[in-house]
Amino acid sequence: MVGITYEDFLDLSYDPADSDLVCEFYVEPAADQDAESAASRVASESSNGTWAELQVDGGVTDLSATACGIEAATAGDREGYRVTVAYPDALFEGGNMPQILSCIAGNILGMKAVDRIRLLDCTWPEPLATSFAGPQFGTSVRSEIFDADDRPITATVPKPKVGLSTDQHAQIGYEAWTGGLDLLKDDENLTDQAFNPFEDRLTESLAQRDRAVEETGEPKSYLLNVTAGGTEMLERVDMAAEHGCEYVMVDVVTCGWAAVQQVRERCERHGLAIHAHRAMHAAFDRLPSHGVSMRVIAQIARLCGVDQIHTGTADLGKLANEDTVGINEWLTSDLYGLDDVLPMASGGLHPGLVPELVDRCGTNIGIQAGGGVHGHPDGTHEGAKALRAAVEAAAEGRSIEAAADDEPALATALDKWGTETPR
Ligand SMILES: O=C(COP(=O)(O)O)[C@H](O)[C@H](O)COP(=O)(O)O
Ligand SMILES: [Mg+2]
Image (cartoon, rainbow, N blue to C red; front, top):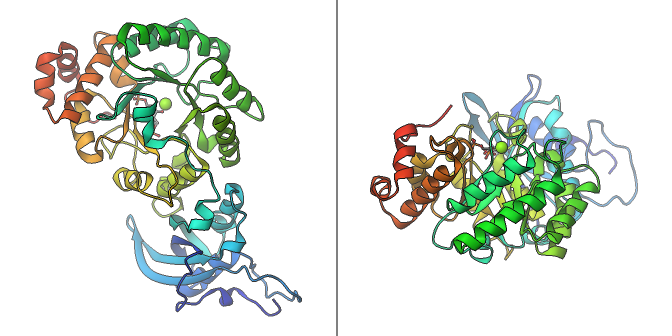
C-alpha cells in the first residue's frame, strides 16, 4: 500500500464486477474540491483509505473501492454530481448489516471534502444479498396469515397513540377487528409504559382478537410493538409467540439493524412475521441532498428480514414521502430468490383516499389508518367498516360512491373527509 492516496480510488473506465456492491451517491464537493477529488475521497474513506498518503508496507489485501462514474446531477434546487462507487465483495462481512453500513454510509456522511452527500441507491450482488436471510413471509402474509389475497390487508393504530389503558386499547382492537379490519397495530412509542403494560396489553388484546375471530369467522392479528433495549426485546418476541400472536412490530431505525437481525433470528424460531415501523427514517432521508434515501433503508430492511415496512402513501397522506411507488416496486421484485416485503401505506390516510392510493400503489400493499378510523363521527367500529368497504371497493374496481351507497359508515366518512389530504 505504500504511496497509496485517495486519487488511486478513481477509475472512470472501471466496469464493476458482478460480485461488486455498486452504490450511487449524490455528492456536492466542498469549495476546495472538484468532482473527481470528492468522488475519489468518497471511495477511499468508505473502503480502506484515509486522508494521508500511506506508508504501510507488506501484503495488505486490496479492498479498495473504485469511484467509476461521475455525472452532473440535481437534488431539489441544488446542483451536484451523481457518483457511482463499486465495492469489492471481500470488503464486507456477509450477513453483517452494521459492518456494511459502516462502509457505505459511515464516515463519508460527515466528511469535510463534501458539502452534501446522500446514498441514493444500491445494486446488491448475489453473494452479499444472499448472505442475509431476508423475510420469512413477505407479501405472502396476505394469504398465509389472512385470507386477503385479492385485496390490500388493513390495519389500524389506536389513537391517542399513547395514554389509553390496556382495557381501552383492547376494546378499540375488538371494535376495529369486528368492523372488518385485519390488524390492530401498536403505535411506535407504545412499548411497556405504566398506563398500558406490555404483557397485559398482549394478553387482553389477543383475548379480544379471539372473540373477534369467532364472531367474524375471519383471521385477525396484532402488530405488537416489542421495541426495547438489550435482550428485553427478544424476551418480548418470545412472549408474543407464547401467547399465540402471529407478528411482532419493531421500530427498526431507532432500534438499529443489529437488533433487527437478532429479532429476525428469534422470529424464525417461532414462525413470527415482522412489521417494521420506520420512525426516525426522515432524519436520514428527508433532505434530498444528504443522508441515506428511504429506498436504501427499505433495501436494508428487506435484507435484514422484515416482512412489512412503512413506505408512505405516494404523497396522499400527512407525511412527506420519497418515491413510494418506486420503493414498493423494489420491495416486491425478485432479489435472487429472497422473499419480498409487503409495503404498508400509512400516515394521514382515511377511506376517501383509498381509491387513489390503490390506483397509485396497486393492491399488493397494507393500508393502515389511525385518525382515519378513530376520527370517524360514529367511532372506531364504524370507522373500521368504512375503511374495509373502501378497500374492498378499490380492489374490486368499484367506485367508492357505489360502495358508500351500500355502506352508510363509508358515506359518513366521505361526508366528513371527502378526498382531502390531511395536514
Ligand atoms: O401512527 C401512524 C399513522 O397514524 P394516522 O393514521 O393517524 O396518521 C404512523 O406512525 C405513521 O404512519 C408513520 O409514518 P410512515 O408510515 O410514513 O412511516
Ligand atoms: Mg404512529
